[in-house]
Length: 598
Image (tube, rainbow, N blue to C red; front, top):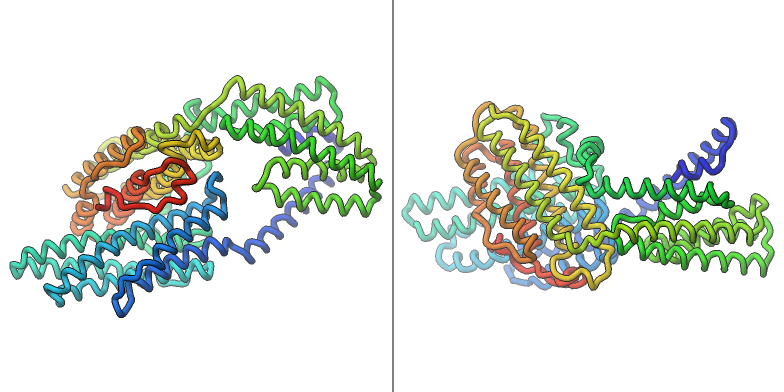
């Protein structure tokens, strides 16, 4: 964009430096305004809605009268989802903060299901053995503390809790219940011990979900630090192991298999054709031809044609409006400044709301802005109109020759992401089971998984912009949830690969069992995504991971990161279990229990 504009206004070094300075100052002013507004607002409605949900859950589980009043929690779930939809739009790809808030709501949803199961089991167990029930008290208190800490962080916009204490209390609660189970089994109370074992699974699940929620609340702004973890903090990651490192992502996508790379090639060719066309035709203000291409051309068919038509209509409307205003009022310098201000406000007001009105505001703003340079309003309006129409026609014509209908391929693309992560995890755990094995296949699997992630994220964004009639069955909402959960999955895998360098011996047999179960679970999730169905019952991932954690120690990297990985797989299964006829129905539907958590 900058190169197109600069090439259209050649100047000597002095004038170029002067223009660069003005652009730099303007950028600083914009940054200052954004920072001021951000600090004043900082996503307050979204934070408040999610905070109310977590606060309601904390109050519910610690009610001294033990009244089963779930209405505030259920209302909080619905209100949080509705607020997030209104904040960013149901058809817009989520921002990093928006994705964090949605993940917090998903974690709260899963935690709620586990807490309901715990409350019901506790009521039955209390009538038989009130002493054994006391082993659940630390779990209730620890869960309430974590929920309240997340709510406090969202309300204030800053993390103020003691992360180490929260995590220690959750670990202690699991340990207390495990000790009580072993005591009952030692006293030959096998039936009671088995019941406590079932409760232990639910408490361990709550611990993992709340730890994930604490992690997200700690760093949702990108400003927080990771939870205190001496093992994790001790090892800096290599560049290729960063989850969102620019260089490894770029290298992985320099292939025609990448949808992002294919679109970049198409965009470059179209912009070059537009620049050559306006220079060949010697159009005044012809730089609007390639600029229009840059504004309109998108990877997907629907948004490209929608934006193209809206840009044509908006440009015509803006030009006509500016011409009528100029003819009626013959504005002087002060009137021009006022009109520029009015339409500048319109530009930012309609930027995300309506592209046609945004384009109309841009057209009128440009007409009055260039009038300061002595160019008649009608002449500037006509030049912009002609160039924009040529650019729109060029873009729509080229895209008509190569349309991409993303919705039909989204299930397969999502399944390929799951399979790519499955292959990466399989190669990674194979190295943990045999630290001396070659690492070449692990590197290749990581690169393939990264390409699959880029393709899926791009496909989800394109599918979100397609017409509603084409969003039946497996939809972008489910794919978005899967991508979000598998991003945390990838973070755990990359951390495990970093710790692999310190492995002094092979992982225990429990790791092999967990690897086999994770491989089976991910294969089932890939099949569910590909076949548009809910996943079947998954292997007992949580129990196997807990056995591994007991064997190697809860603070060991292998235990810590596999806990994160298992939780991400279960969240993905929960997302795929939600029936979705459309994006709008999914946003309004109340989530139900997943086979993975039954």
